[in-house]
Figure 1 (spheres, rainbow, N blue to C red):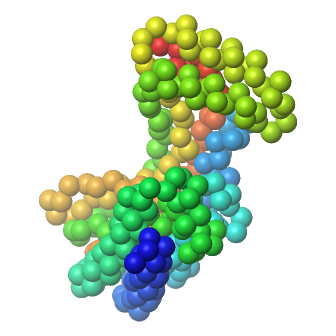
Figure 2 (tube, one colour):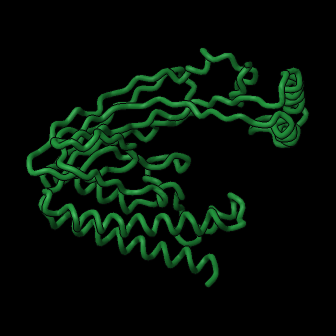
Length: 287
């Protein structure tokens, strides 16, 4: 079979497995469901206002359950979200423990196809653009990361689900010569609103700054979007587990668990001002 046929088959299997999981969740005994809808702009790092206020919108019960199952089957951008940013819906579905085995098996069936699709695409010799074209020829407008994201199940009798926010930075060490080659190539690709003649001198200055640095490597520290997380504790000796709040998780317990809700978050989007950057636009550290 061709790569296209392999990925298409796995994707169709994923759709079927997700439908089976969602049907099961709507038919079984749900103890509690809770989700937080985030603003469409949450995580947009292009905002230059200097700060970001994220106010989650809380939903519970059947509405939350429907939102959760909808997120499991969502592989394309939400209608009012930028396609640059994957859809996120922090939340959880709490089922009665008698459903734990069936739910886990259905989730495993979904995650298996997600892993297969990811391995098929990443093991190919396609470049990033070709990979995106492949997956979107099978699922138009698909965001690959939303297909790859696994559905999580927390084993053990749940005691508390605590929502929180996490601020992180991406740290990379890059060979200086490779980075200089990248900068040299970028001279011919000015951003929107700039001509090549206007753009090239700026890049030349950046090249000279990098050349002036001693050593063979440079460090890049790039702020990442704020991320919702869930800390799940249990009534037995199971250790507390932390999950990213990309899509709702599934937990088990006879009685509704205690909840620490996801609160509004105020984050400075000008944190980069506090870092000693050599080249701010590329987050190259001056160290």
